[in-house]
Length: 149
Image (tube, rainbow, N blue to C red; front, side, top):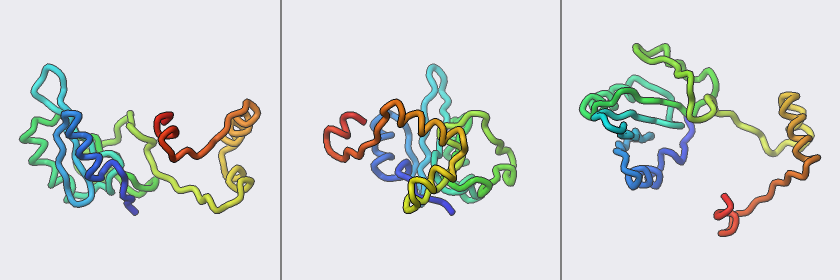
């Protein structure tokens, strides 16, 4: 199940262009090419996009060849085990990720106790330690909150 992500919106594409990157828009994802310093090559990213398909690889290949792209980092926004890069020739899992490697969903309609119960024991411990140290979470969807963010 691929999830639409803000990193594939028109607004994000425009932001990337303003940063000096080349952006190529496709049906449900964008390819962003970043210039490498002092060499005529680039690297590409498709971050939090749809599941990897042969169609996607076929779409980006001619662009990457033309633009002298060294590699493209593809990090799909899919659930764990939903995509397997080993189904595709010449793809492999990078030891470094830009985002957490998998997406997950948390049902916020559950009680706080149930959510804590379902957490890893160390995570549950850290949440309680944060509470003892006075860490508070507040929603701030106003200008002040945006500036803080």
